[in-house]
Amino acid sequence: MSTFSGIRLAESGLVAARTGMNLTGQNIANQTTVGYTRQRVEQTPAPAPGLTGLWPSTLAVGGGVGVAAIARLGDEVLDARVRDALSASGFWSARAAAASRAEAAMAEPTEDGLAATLDRFWAGWSDLANDPDASAAHVVLTNARVLVGQLAAGYRSVANQWSGLRQQVDRQIADVNAAAGQVAVLNGQIREAMQSGRNANELIDQRNLIVQQLSTTVGATAVIEADGTLTVRVDGNALVSGDRARTLVVDGPVDIADGGRVTVAWADRPGVAVAVTGGAVGGTISALAPESDGGSLAAVAAAYNRVAADLATAVNDIHRTGETSAGVAGGDFFALDAAGPAALGLSVVPEGIEDLALAAPGAGALDTTIADRISALSTSASGPSATWSTFVTGFGVSVAGDLHRADIADTGAVAAIAAQQSTASVDGDEETISLLTYQTAYQASARVLTAMDEALDILINRTGLVGR
Picture 1: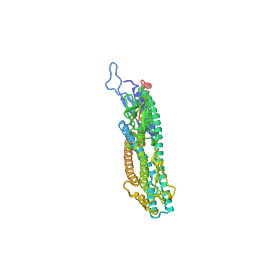
Picture 2: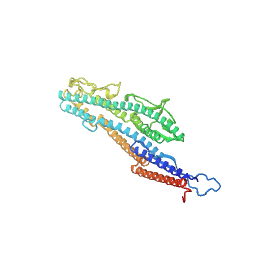
Picture 3: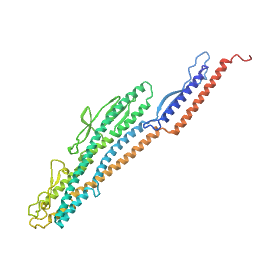
Picture 4: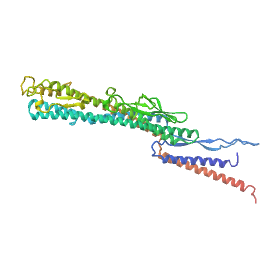
């Protein structure tokens, strides 16, 4: 062993300890950085150098310490679990939020809801049957116009919400395409860094954070390849592969009245739909789906249309059987435009009491049998009020189910993130201890270097001076 090998051994300890202090400082500096994963110095003992000479000693000391790598303390399994949990949370949160807003706009059961307006409409007919004067007729016609306006307003409210969510899907897919491009760029940088032996830990953290956003938005899954790149998939097909990214486009109706289903497809294969079953985009698309496919907004719009159609049919069927005070056969009370949604095409035909057919044929001008029969629709098992009540009850149960699933998914996401952070997050106390440890190691290695220097000083400068 060389006389100067002790200096090299002490120097390796200084380098390792200094690297540890620098890395600990990096961890502490990024303690509050979103997406940062703590790092650790991996050290390895250097073997003893080869021995040569006429009388090589077998008592060789090792060559010190080497820094093998700077390890990123992430867990691929926990990262994948977080992505899956964020996908489910994004889906149910988006779906529940859309249904909750629609339910809130319905304002049931309150005095501002459609059910209360229907009750006032039926009560007006009952009052008119008891006292057939102009004042009571005016109340009936006013309540009818208010009812028609509320049906139209309710439909427009859900239609506007549908259009807003449709535009939101366009924006989300644009964000997905931009994020996929960023992941592709980072893949290229990470692959180049790893192939050249450089540290790519911070780049990996940036990539993982973006991929988590992709999972939350579009339900993306990911797997790490042998070259360090991350392949991101949607519906089993690669959105990002290596340093290349594909583009998604949105297709389908732009208005709730158009019908059909909003879909996502690849830009290079626009005719082939991509099944987005996770993330906020998947949840929003499920809320935008037709009623037959479980779309919550289309179900509300269809309920308004059914009530409008049932109201016109039920009231008109009875009103046509009566006579006005002048003995003229009754006509339609409600007009329904078949060119568009029933909730928007409903209108009131009579202008005053003289247009109301309140009497049964031949019963006399003061008869109010028809008014009484119309008021009885309030309790009909197949009447408009029953139609609306049945829908509101079922929709409330459906919304409660979506909210419950959203809560469960959120809880799962929180648990997954907590498990991930238990491994990857920076602990200030732990880093402080590491800093003190490396500092002590540095001081000790410096002391070894001083001792070696003193020994060499004696060997070089004082050998042969004994007795002088």
